[in-house]
Image (tube, rainbow, N blue to C red; front, side, top):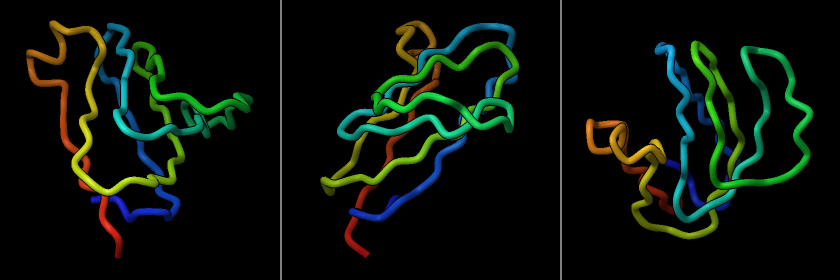
Length: 91
């Protein structure tokens, strides 16, 4: 669950040797760090490419309540289970 209109940090950990473009529906985020090193990526996005054996931290301020899908944009990966739902609510 994420608080509506409040800052949250999400961490994506890729333990595999494959690339995973992780897509978040309904909100935009900013990449904060890659493998613990500050990211110099000043723009907002809805998808981030997580490289093999990489950890990516992103910051997000969800504006709209609801249930939002988070998934790998490689459909075979999403179908195999790389998807989840985030619940955004006013706290």
